[in-house]
Image: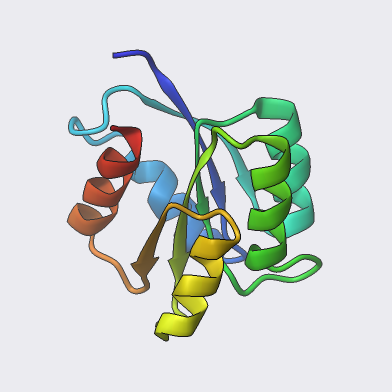
Length: 124
C-alpha cells in the first residue's frame, strides 16, 4: 500500500497533538503527518502546499470555519478525503459538511479506536 499524507486541522492544540500521536499506532503504518493547522486559512495554505491525501477537519475554528475550508479544499484537491472531527453533533451540521465535500464525520470526544477506524475507512 502506498503511503498517505495526513493534514490535521483543529483549533485545539490538544486535539491536534492527540491525532498526530495516533499516527504511531501500528494499525496506521502507511500514514504520515504532513502538517498541523489551527484554523481554516492555515489549513487551506497547507493543503495547497502539501497536497494531503487525508485531512481531519474541525468545524468550529477562527479565521475560516471548517465548512468554508472543506468547500475550498474540495475545489482545489477533489481527490483529498476529509474526515470531520467535531463536537457539533447535530445531523444537520454533519450533512452540511458532507454536502460541501467531507467524506466522514466523527464526533468529539472520540476514542483512539474510533478515530483509527475512521481513518482506515477513508484510506480504502
